[in-house]
Length: 117
Image (tube, rainbow, N blue to C red):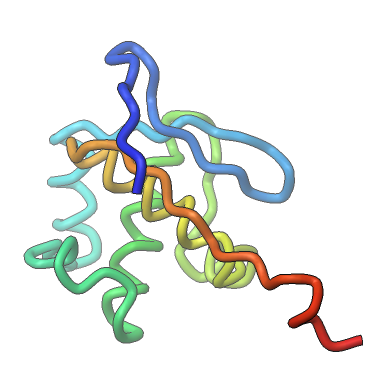
């Protein structure tokens, strides 16, 4: 994974349905999310997308982080819109949102000889 420098003034971004949105989450929003949903992020970073409950946590956090950009999608709506192939980029943005270092996740592409026609 390649580490890149992040502009401290630029928010991490995700693309949904061809539109790119900045992610922003204040501590107040995080408290609000935990109060409204009862979700404790706890060890989310270690668990990642393993298990339905952890994916629900990621989608809930993403839902709240999109609100400042005027996007009001529920975790259930995000679950329907995002494909598994999108989660690498979502995970990168969420890691950056939570103060982690931005990394580039490379998805291996099959060789032409490996593609079944």
